[in-house]
Amino acid sequence: MQTVVIVIHLMIVAVMIGAVLLQKSEGGGLGMGGGAGFMSSRGTANLLSRTTAVLAAGFFLTSLFLSWYAGYNRAPSSIIQPASQTQPAGGGPITPPTSGGILDTLKKADEQQQQAPAAPSGPQVPRSQ
Image 1: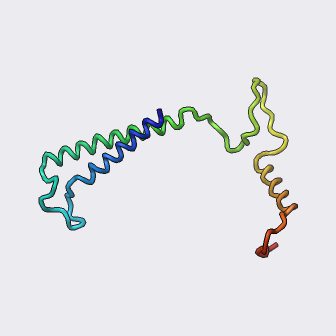
Image 2: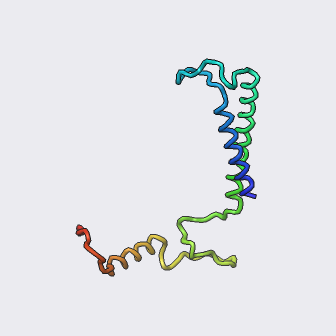
Image 3: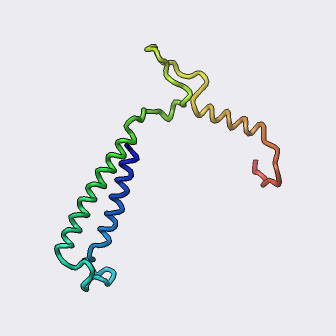
């Protein structure tokens, strides 16, 4: 489902880019505003601007759908509680972890790395203590 919507989304984007590039420039910002060009009639300009508006609405709708679909089955998660600690299946009270939180775990891992440095494989840059 998501792949189909992404393909439709990309086709809308490609056609919308083409429609915008085919439109006649109104301003003289780059000095190329006038002249009779390939798409110079007024009816074609109205058709291109309507086509651009419809494509923009399609782009907006497919973008909203893709963002909604991406978060549809997403379960809420906490950045404070580590993923290895899950809530009990029963309805009992939740006790705080005795081993500490994620910060304590990171501190222990850092201390272990400092206590047992690996043997250098080549010349090392001096460290300040």
